[in-house]
Image 1 (tube, one colour):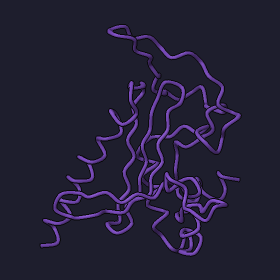
Image 2: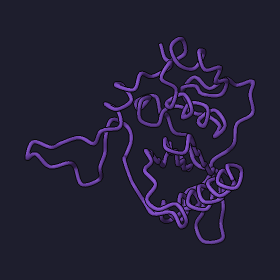
Image 3: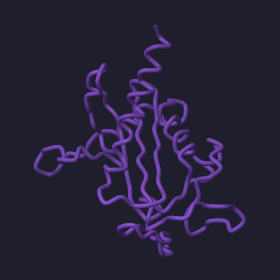
Image 4: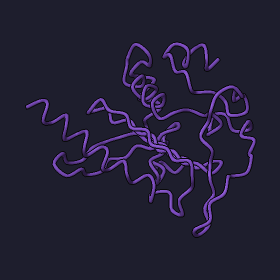
Length: 176
């Protein structure tokens, strides 16, 4: 179903369930580090969590998927808003992580641009990490991945700030 309705339509060639990974293609290996020692990550079957990290992809295909989220012809604005609206708990309060359906909604100050709202999801699995974010007001999507785990997730993911800052600066200079 995901192939027919999403991946094929968007011409995403690398997104596939991990447990169906073709053997004829090369894939990055995941590594485990302990001090100065590095070894391959153990095999892990992710088939039980397809919707929450059971797919493999390249950052390039993730960026194209994120761009599709900004296209009203692919995802109507009303559906997108449902996915991006943080969940309200039974006590009437928005959950403290501002989590919506698969995305966190965040607004952080970026020097020279003020508060920039984005929708993000990060993950750690099988010795690898990924950070994915969509910045609607700037029509931008960022996907960053690594094939090892860091001690603290944001030791890796915080690079998005530099990427976002660099691309916002380029966009600003092109609009002048």
